[in-house]
Every structure is written in C-alpha cells, then in structure tokens.
Image 1 (cartoon, rainbow, N blue to C red):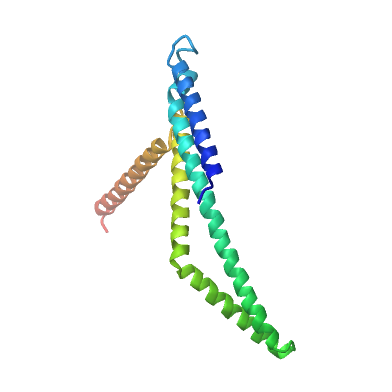
Image 2 (cartoon, one colour):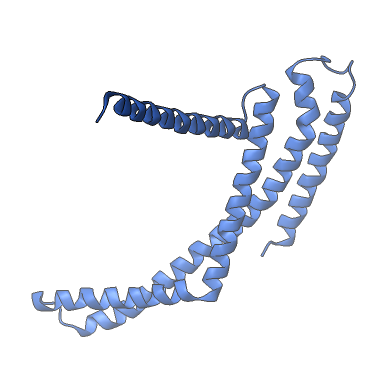
Length: 192
C-alpha cells in the first residue's frame, strides 16, 4: 500500500536514527563523555531502547495511517453510493407532506442496506482488524517508551503501580475479612 517514495523516506529515517542512536550510545558508555552518575548516565544507557521503540512505532504509525485512510475511504464510498441510490429513488415520490415520511424510510433502508453490506464484507473486516491491531501495537510501543523514561527518572512504572494496586486490593480484602470475623465473634460473645 506504500509508495516507493514513502518506503525510501522510511528507510532513510531508520538509517539516520540507528546511526545517531549508536553514536549516542557509544558516547554515553564512556564515563568521561558525560557525567558518570545521575539521570543522564541512565538515560544514555537506555537511549538505544527508546530509539528502537521510536523506530518501530514509526513503522506502525505509517501502517495505522494507511489503514485509517482506507477505513474512511470505504465509509465515504459507501455513503456516496447510498446517497446516489437514494437520490434516484426519492424524486420518484411527490414532495408533498404525505410522502416525506416515505422518503425518510427509503433513505434509511438504502443506507442501512449499504452499510450493512460494507460492515459484513471481508475487505472491511480485514482492514478494520489490521487497523485495530496496529493501534494496539502503537500503544504498546508508547507504553514501553514511557516505562523507560519513568525508570530513568526513578519514578514508578506502570507495572510498579499495578503491583501496588494489587497489594492494596489484597489488604482491603484481608481487613474486610478480619472486621467480619471480629463482628461475628462480638455477636457470639454477647449472645444473639
């Protein structure tokens, strides 16, 4: 689906990105190049991960944009065809007050049929599935980049926060159970 010009530009972008990433990675590995301790050192060691994720996310972004354009093209083509069919049918009906409702029903039926056919078509399903898949891949790349950046800043990552939430949930359940047991013992002690 991509033109050769787009492919060449994409390959050039990859080549330049990898070159500069390797150069920065080499510079960061030298203690005298930048401060040997601190966030810049950690950032330098993780620069390769970030650049790799960025390059891969760029590929997925190009794919997503291609799929999104095809998605809207399919919707537009279906709308245009349905409108043409509707325009052919509606002039056959007189435009008095009685027939306006009939015109609406015809319009709704034509659009419903055309869009149902579109949504049931294998071509639409394939494109939509690939679009959603690349969107999920993009989200995965962005989450990975955010995790690396948070790690560089010594902030908790998403996994760390998820683990804390799991522990909080477990503690809440244990406390609820303990309160329930204490109330039950209190009732048993005082007598029903």
